[in-house]
Length: 292
Image (cartoon, rainbow, N blue to C red):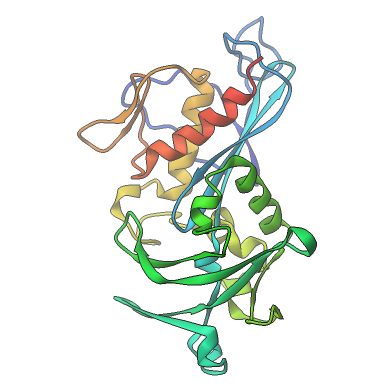
């Protein structure tokens, strides 16, 4: 997935940046003083990889910023599903479960069969969750069910704490999540754990939870929402990440123009993603951790 940025181009007003991948590495010698191919900044940065998060009702986005030899080296981004996305049954699976184990929600596109119970992690750190009866509404107008327990009212609120968000990402990347029954028995063989792409590729339990793998909104017509324009979801994130790297994470207002294009510190980009502020903020959050 790792691709090389062909050059650190000066970002000009109205210029459309190239959208390439979810993992970016700057790799151009921009001056005699900078021959390492890394992005120089005016602040002192600590070597390492740093994270930032953008919690959403049914997703959790993450940005990673890597600093090598005191300068920006690469970035990555990902967005994973929260329990209210993956804790579901197919209609056939739901029909085989006791009614007490299934919460049926009617929607404009048909019924969604939520599992009443789910678990994240294993052993003493495992978090057991139960579906809340009350429906909630996402920013795009769709309804969803939240999950919680006696200590956690809503898991999507729980991961707004960075430590909790980082822990959840570790569990997803280890495949440590399951639908379970009321007695705590894991239901290991469910359709929701794997995703089949249009080209027939079958994604495993980990990749099925990651937007870059399921090719979420990769181009016009592949997802819901006209706000992504021709860039697609990953293309918009590439544009945002590229701009921040090429400008060295400038200070300034993050807004949009009348044509729905994201503006970062007076620099107009071609990004048109709707929920832009949270995405931009997660990159800055990761970057700010790298400052000495």
